[in-house]
Image 1 (cartoon, helix red, strand yellow):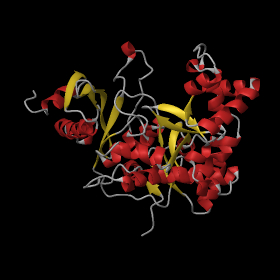
Image 2 (cartoon, rainbow, N blue to C red; image 1 turned 90 degrees about the vertical axis):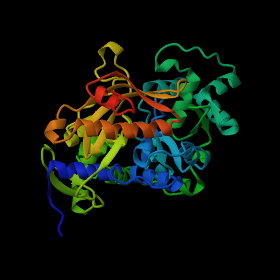
Image 3 (tube, rainbow, N blue to C red; image 1 turned 30 degrees about the vertical axis):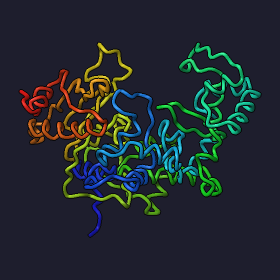
Image 4 (cartoon, rainbow, N blue to C red; image 1 turned 180 degrees about the vertical axis):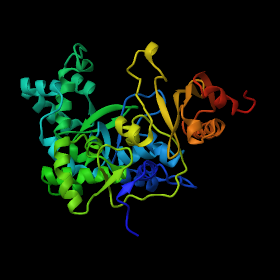
Length: 409
């Protein structure tokens, strides 16, 4: 049967949710390394972020797709077995190590930040000294390097109070001249790049920039299912002009298919591997740092869901909360919850819970949303080694969510 060259908005949503791995049934038994590898191969990368009010950002996409699992699995996969490596993908990311050659063009270009570049230009001797120290003594943190060279760690000025040592190390990291691992919770420690990228990958030829960008665009297209050029560019933070220039050739070669999507102002691009499920019964809490939420305009275009992260918004001005996770039910987002792991009290705190205002128009029952959401929260609490879920905050869904608890009301 020929594939349609036009898609309804509902069809596009189902394609997207399926491509992102959020529609697949979770493993029935024990989650192991093979399952995590499957997520990595599908997405290509997961974003890293330092916020730990709930869980580290790079762990949450695996929970969303696989459910509860041993959180040490990912750390072993990334930092012991080096099947992922840390670098700048979308933002700071853990990336499938097999993709390292596709990012060498970025390593060869100038740093996007002025701070590390300025230090490298002003103190090339420091850069050379630190590269030698890292290769000799790494993995080693910026603080340990400062102690080694007798540098005072005065945290003044912009760049998060970074010392010249930290800026120089970040310069080396951008250029791929040092690698990085995480330890002691979340501390970045710098190392010889050969430590984190295996020889069989390092020995591969370096593709041209155009070849690499082409492959990165196709990886983004596969992870999105159907997308606009801007969506694809955002995935790996690629220049939109380069992506647009590649699109006609990719369509002519059959690597992508142009489709008209209901409600989209721009032609959609569908990956050949994208499937169109007849029905999607997803049920997942999705991190604000998940690939599914990266491009806010896309989320609103595909799902009709407007989301803004409020971590950096003053508390008095926040609408929904500090660390708000959208709740995906079926093929779209129906609610959002502000969550916090109270580790001392062993509770998962729901600091606010909000339903989407058009639930009734969609034919979705609020009680069902509350019940399914509470079940997902209970799974999340178990995964985080917490004993209970407690609704402590505001929001128009909070009463219904609290009422799903035994004895709630």
